[in-house]
Length: 213
Image (cartoon, rainbow, N blue to C red; front, side, top):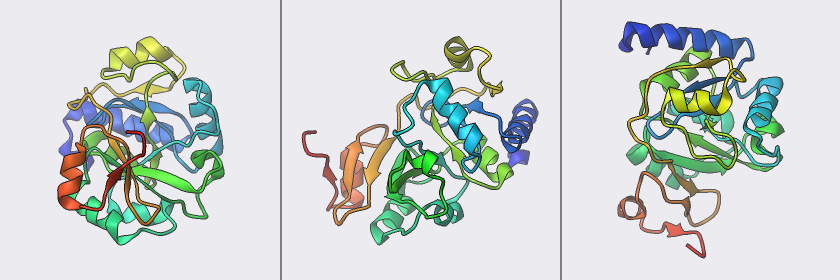
């Protein structure tokens, strides 16, 4: 994956992979908004993500994957409707909520039984996850309650030197992903984002919006 990136970006990604392997945290562009990441299996690094964002540890953190083969590493079961949505919308701006794998640390899921996963349509986060050889935390790179960052400068203005690296690449999307819960009998849109509900309906007619939306 690295050889498909421009040399300057490739160098930043290689540094990012090295930092992730050492337990550091980094910010990077995605196809939606800037992400804040760490190795999902490194307890101290995940704790630091919560602390830096000012995010309560009972709120789960989403994961970014390099490819579909990593889904089985973090999900306990993957229903057929999930694979249907994966085939049509991933890589892309769709986050799926699935039952978590037993091996996944509780700190990542906020103590809950589900995990949110996404495969971005952006070469930088997928190269990071591929180079690490494992899924990475992919929460939005902003302080809790603040707007999502779309540029490296916006990330730096919010976090300063509290993170180890900001990869400067820019986000082509600018809008958060759409979140769909596929843990029950009926898939539920929890948040409508870059992918419209009507697009999802065309692929999966049984999908519904969360009650109250």
